[in-house]
Image 1 (cartoon, one colour):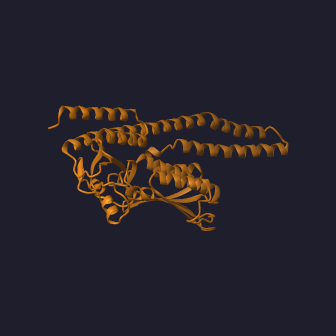
Image 2: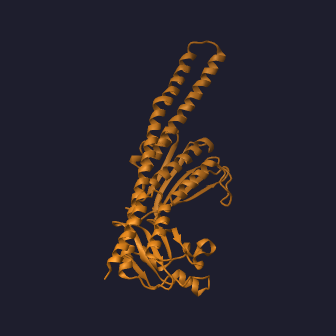
Image 3: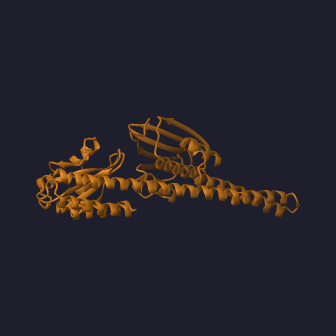
Length: 379
């Protein structure tokens, strides 16, 4: 039975942690602060938190007072290899707070004499969740502690639920921020269309009309040049508006890219194998990379024809854009030769994908992206 004093202490701990969570807006700062507070109110020494994404990739985002054996080589033992708690989380067996009989990372450290473990051999592990949605693991430990009582596990479970709810809140806030950014892009696109785009069109018509009013050859030549510049600027502006506000993306990625190719005056052949429903952030990444790739085809490849391929196989989405234009020299070991290619690579990696580009002089260029596809996303 829990004493009255213990119950009051537990409620006080939950109150302090809840206040910290309610004030937090930055995910990693929040997790670091809450972990520190949890260890303080429970009297435990060591703790660490993993965030685990939908592809079961784990990231150590917070830790306090890890023993020497676990912080060597920039915390390599914590970031490489597997462990029993992560295995149980990934295969669905870990649903509640649990005693882990022994920690594999610490066992390996002792076995291979990789440093002092501060007499820590066991830890409690708790899944971070909000409803049915899971976000990661909370682990806590103390020297010479090999068992956690039901009361301790219940407290850890309560804190983990609060953390999971706070993670959900922060993620919703981030999504809302992304929606605000999209709304601002749409507003800017409308402004460009209603003002600058129309002014350029008027300038082109004015130059054409003025040319009919003069017989001077030099003036006609200058007015023709103005027409060409206006037409080119108008095409660039329309492409920019499409980049800001991808009309047709609501009809799917392929439809949007084909329409964008038409705006650039390109002929796009496409092939799609498999059906996949991908998250918004991943779709926007492929959309932006596709835009940049088609722009490069138009400006640098000396060709107006390109090939778009999307296929899903072995839980991987493969996205390719290829042209048979002039090509260029590129080495996989060297840095990318242009800001546009670097931007495509950074976007891809930020969305969890792998970016590759291959090209040879006179043999065209191929941009390829590979991204993991969830079971839940694949239809």
